[in-house]
Image 1 (cartoon, rainbow, N blue to C red):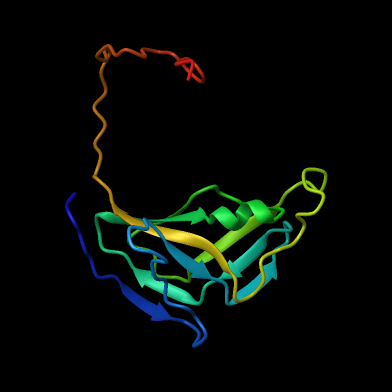
Image 2: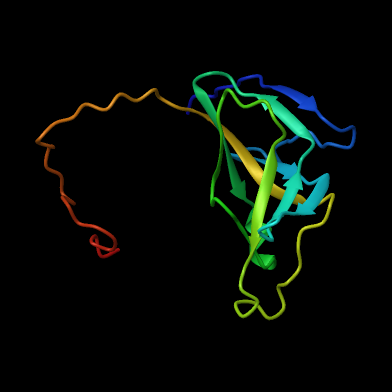
Length: 150
């Protein structure tokens, strides 16, 4: 395995912001900590991290829920957040309250100071689509959802 290390500029927007770190060696993502929380007009829980970063061109920041999400009655609103290299604003994590009927005991929100999400920064290729009338064949072919039987 090739070890790749990149340096990312990070700006604390508020002094209490927590710089993301890997929890254990070999982790793919770093935890993001909430320093603010508001409920928007749609009822979403919006957690600010107090951080802005400068992702280099050719990379993307991906925001994922942490595995602790299973303890809460929340879902990350866009499933995976995408932070493009040109974005310089605060990293926020927006969660939608799930149906109260889905969870009987799991109704809590994250609190300020909690690790609410995780960020992974990975390289991305620049894609150019080439229109064609023919695609190569594959074992799966046009089989859709569940077509592999696995």
